Length: 147
Image (cartoon, rainbow, N blue to C red; front, side, top):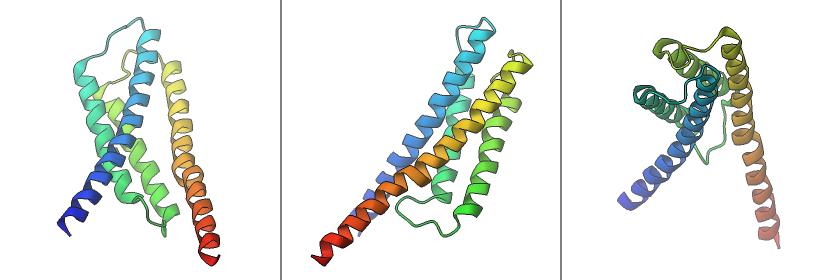
């Protein structure tokens, strides 16, 4: 029993860190572009730590809203919460902590559009593309079991 709980916790941690890493990579990439446009070619360590912690908190919340391996009974409601949390975490974090502060207004607008497109792509990937594979495998398993 204890071993099973540990494995489940470990698997959760691995999946959560994967999502955290995706969000962190995206933030760092967007900051690099923004800073490059402004003539900056280094990043503050404090900003990177803040971004990492925000990404980790968001990935933990995301794993709570969309538990791995479970069917989503409240997908629409959880997606709305996920979207709100993403905007509070990333847009709010960027505004409060000044991650993109030297950027001109048009660069911030581009970053916001890229953010919205990235959120849509993440949601589609996790809840449509990956789930489609699972549905197909389950369908094949049922057909195999009937043989």
